[in-house]
Amino acid sequence: YSHAWNRMRDNFQFPAARDPRLDRQIVWYQRNANSLRTALDRADPFMGWILDQLEEQNLPAELALLPVIESGYQPLARSPGGAAGLWQFIPGTGNRFGLKESRWYDGRRDVIASTQAALEHFVYLRDEFSGDWLLALAAYNCGEGAVARAVQRNRSRGLPEDFWHLDLPSSTLEYVPKLLALRDIVATRGHYGIALPNLDAETQIA
Image (cartoon, rainbow, N blue to C red; front, side):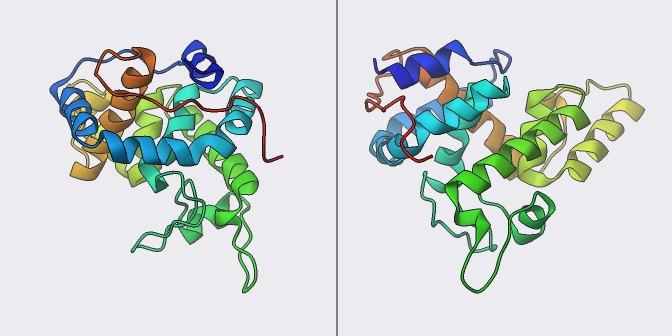
């Protein structure tokens, strides 16, 4: 098991979860194991440096897996909706977190600049949702306003206010379990029958 995966597992911070949505995502990864491996192979040049940044800020190592879901770890990825880069920033959010765009340069596609902006964004969301990482992750996907409104709706009805009980867009209801399922696959080596590539844990891009 490569040092990168061990570093990651040692710094997992998201709460443990058991939910049918998470189980469905694990089955999806099992059926798409080759695509997952391809995305993780692409992570190799970046993973050590991203883990360095997360450890320096005491942020959850799960966040290093998010570009697998966002972009397949492709720095030049662009979505039909105009999001770009490893972390799939839309222009407005990229600008809000200091990513410059011009005719010649797009900070969203700059691995170092966009990673630093993504972690700044996550610190902001974590604080906005009182340290609840699952709400922060949901907000990264659908916006903090949508999550805050869903929490308020549940609060006004006397319902639980955690992620699993919120009425959120269907894409967000899949997004959070997708990352948690990936975390579980990494945390329980071989348990789900998915072989992970060896990743270099050393910085290669700074």
